Amino acid sequence: MPYNEALRKRLNIKRPQTIFILYWFLLSYILIFLVFWFEVLNKQNDQISRYRLDMIDVNDPFHREKQHEIEYIHDRDKGQYIGEAITFLILLAGGAIFVFRAISRQFIQSQQQQNFMMAITHELKTPIAVTKLNLETLQKRVLSNEQRQKLIKTTIQEANRLNALCNNMLLTSQIEVGGYKIIKEEIDLVKVILECVNDFIIRFPERKIEVRLPEEVIVTGDVLLLQLAVNNLLDNAIKYSRKDGIVLLEMYERSKGIHIKVFDEGPGIAERDQRMIFEKYYRGSHGRTKGTGLGLYLTKRIVETHNGLIKLEMNPGGGSIFEIVLKTQKKYF
Amino acid sequence: MQKKNSILLVEDEENLQDALRLNFELEGYEVTSVYDGAQALRKVHDEYFDLIILDVMIPEIDGITVCENIRLFNSEIPILILSA
Image (cartoon, rainbow over all chains, first blue to last red; front, side, top):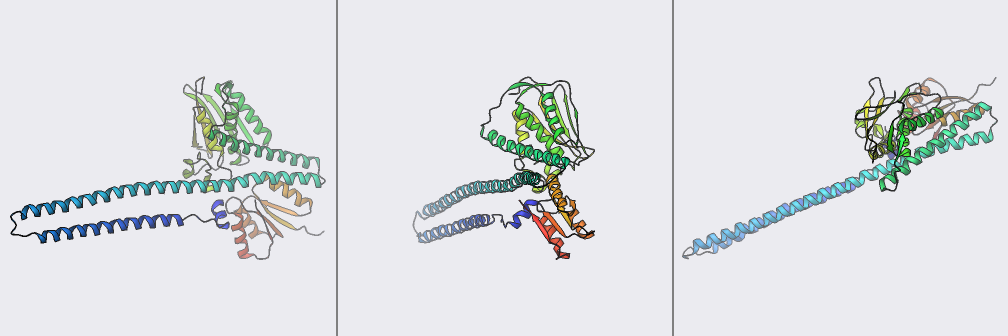
C-alpha cells in the first residue's frame, strides 16, 4: 500500500465525501423541484384555459375570436414559463459546474498540501535524526578514527541534504510569488555543471558519476538557478538508482539548442507517472516514492525561466533520461 | 562464549541504518539490516531474531503492514517501530 494511503488510514484522515453527497443531494432536490413546479404550472395553465373556453357562449358571434385569444394566452403563458425554466436551468447548471470545480480544486489542493506536509516531515526529520544520532555517537562512544570520519562524513551529507531541501522550498515559494530576482549574467555552463558534478563526486565517492562535456558553452542565465536545476537532476539520478549503477551527465550543443542529459540506471518511471512527474508536490507510484515533490517541479520552472524545455525519456537499457534543452542564443531573458 | 543477541534492523535510509548499526554493534548485538518490507518479511520467516527495529516508511510494504504480517505467525518477538 502506498505510504500516504497507509498513513491516511492509520491517522484516520477521511476523504471529505460528506460535502459531495450534500452537493448532489441539493442539486437533485432543486432539479426535482423544478420539474414538479413546471408540471404544476403547466396543469394550472391548461385548467385555466379549459375553464375560460367552457365559459364562452357558443351563441356569441365573437366566440371564435375569443377562443383564439384564450388559446393564444395559453400558448404565450406556456412559452413564458418554459423560457423561465430554461433560463433557471442554465443558471443552475452554470452555478453547479462552478461550485463543483471550485470544491474539487480546493480538495485537490488541500490533499496535495496534506501529502506535502507528510512528505516534508519525513524529509526533514530523517536528516535531523541521522545528524543527532551521529553527533551523540561521536560524543558518547570511543571510536576508531575510521568510524569517526565516517560519522562526520554522513553528518555533512545530511546537512547538505537539509540545505538542498531548504533551497528547493525557499526558491519554489520565491519563484511563485515573484520574489526571486533573477540575476542575468554570461556564464560558462560547462564550468557550472563541472562544479555540481564535482560536488556530487565528493559527496558520493563510491558512486559512478560520469560526464561528457564540450570545452565551453556560454549562456546567459542565473548561476544559482541553473546549478539548482542540475543538482536536482543529479540528486534524483543518484537517489533512485542502484549503488553500482552509472549516472551519466552529457552535454552537447546543436544548431537548435544546448542539450543537457542526465542518464540513470534506476528502475525507470512508470508510464502513469511520466505525465505527472513535473507537477508540484507530485511523487511517483501514488505518493510512494520518497521526496517532497518539489525538485522536478522547481527544475521545470527554472528551465522555463530560461526559455528552455525539460523532457523525460526512458533509457532503453533501463532507467530514465532527463533532458534539458536551452535555446542557443546569447540572451535567455 | 555467550551467543550475541540478534537484531533485525529494517531501515531504508542508509546513513540512519549505518549509525544505528554502529551503536548496536558497539553495545554487543549482532545486527542484520535490510532496506525494505519484503526483505524484512523474508528474513523473519527464515531466521530467528531477538528484536526487530522497524521503520514505518519503507519501500515495498510499509512498516505497519510488515508488523501486522509478522504478528500473524509470531506473537512473541518484540518489535520496535521507528516513526517520524
